[in-house]
Structures are given as C-alpha cells and as structure tokens.
Image (tube, rainbow, N blue to C red; front, side, top):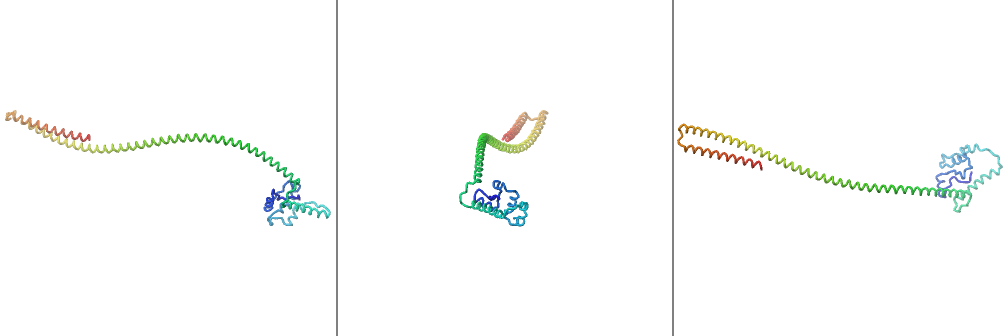
Length: 277
C-alpha cells in the first residue's frame, strides 16, 4: 500500500525485535494516504496466533475488500500493480536487512530534520533543567543552612538538658544518701527508745521496791517513835531510871535515822545514774 513496513525501527535489531513480537505501527509519514479500512485489514492479518488470524473467507469478506469499487482496468495493468508493489517491498526488505549504507532519500532528509528539531527541543529542555537544577540547588543550600543552624541549636539544647539531668541525678543521689542516713538514725532512735523503755521499766520496778522498803522503814520508825514516846511518858510519870537512858534513846534514833537516809539516798543516786546511762 505504501512501500513501507509497519515494523520499521531505528536499527536493524529493533526492526527484527518488532517483527518477532508482532509490534507494528502505521506511521502517518508512510501511511497517511492509506485508508482506515485498509489499515484495519492489514492489522487483522498481522496476527501471530493463527487461531485468531483472519481466514481466507473472512479476509475476502472484509469491508475493505467488499466495499472497494470495481474498476475496469486493462489486463496488463492488473498484472503490473502487484509486480510493482512486490518490487517495492523487495527493495525495501533488501534495504533494511543489507549492510549497505542507506541512500539520502527525501524520507531520510525529513527524518533528519525531525531529529534536528528533537535535538533542539532536547537542548531547550536541558537548559530548562539546568535552570531548575540551579534553583533547586539554591533551595537545597538554604535547607542545608537551616538544618545546620537547627542542628547546632539542638546540640546546645541537648548539652543543656544533659547537664540538667546530671545535676538532677546528683541531687537524687544526695537525697537517697540522706534518706538512708535518716533511716539509720530513725532505726538507732527506735533502738534507743526500746532500750530506754526497758530501763524505764526496770527503774519503775526498782522505785516500786524502794517505795515498799521506804514504807516499811517509815512504819518501823513510826513504831519506834511510838515506843520512844511511851517510854518518855513513863519517864515523865516518874518511872524513868535516869537521864542516861534518854541520851541513849536519842543517840539510837539519830543513828537509825542517819543510816536509813543514807541508804535511801544511795538508792536514789543509783537509779539516777542508770537512767542517765
């Protein structure tokens, strides 16, 4: 239809890969004068799977075949067209798969012009990319500067927080040591209070015994004084033998009173000394 292959690639390897993968494209450059029905007919014939490809009957029933106007042409013209198309296709195939350098045809010149335009667009795009890169580089430099400032600030804050935490840990250790010391002192006070309670109990018992002894001694003294009083009354009534007996009685009472008082004071001193200990 056009003398061009829909499998045409930039290189021979690409063309071969397109043929193997049945990857074709109707380029407008070569198929602009080809009708859509003709393209559809070719597309349905270029199917790798034979089960999905058009059969002969389906191909003959295609609209491009059935709707084509019947034209009366000379017999030699009917034979010449297929030969020309076959010749063009054979020349194109030899050109694509040969190692000879291509000719500078009009199509190649057009393609070169498009390549030049693409290169120019690419250069303009590269220029825009360079400008974008410069702008992005400035933004990156700004972000890096901000990051460095923030990093320095965070380091200072980190050092300050670390110093405060160190002080808090030191204060906590001091408080723990003081707490242990107070606990030891409280335990010592408890022990001392327990000991003092025992001593107080002992002193209370000792004072109770002293009180009983003192009561007994006082009773004995009262009895003795009562007896002395009776003797004095007897002396007054004329029954006293002599003044000598009176002196003996006074000396005896003084001696008894002195001995009892000394014993009582000694007991009190002993109790006070124990309480101080």
